[in-house]
Image (cartoon, rainbow, N blue to C red):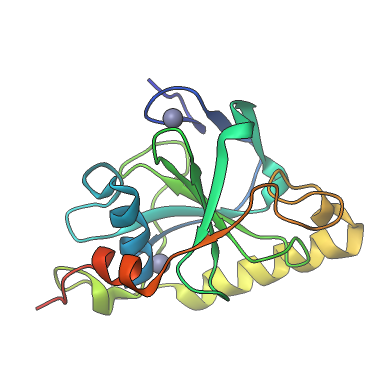
Length: 192
Ligand SMILES: [Zn+2]
Ligand SMILES: [Zn+2]
């Protein structure tokens, strides 16, 4: 069992949490890339909802702390410049998405569908790739929130506080870029 704002991977080797005071945006993303990520990891049944959505809490990386198994962090990219998609090397549980460095302080922490502790979903985006018709809502607010949080972190130097990048700004795990074949194999079926 995971409590409010605490997470564990499927096999239990990794545990992490998001600070109770961490502010952010609870959104649901239906994009094909998020679906591809879950499908490639083999966890789509557990981490995507029936419409193909991924629930995400966008916040600052410094609010995310690993309490066990951080050495099992793995990261992949769907393409060379794509988001860094962090996950558990042990069992494939998705953890979160970041940019390719710590300069823009951002993590989209991945929630299990229906996970509590983050308030209601206020943003639904990339709904064209949802499996059922869903109305997009709130994306400008999410973007504004992420920009404001990242700018504040940058001003105070706290963007360097992140579990995903070292002091040299290199990712703490070697990113693996999916081959075109791997990516295509994990693509969701076209909606409609
Ligand atoms: Zn695991
Ligand atoms: Zn997405």
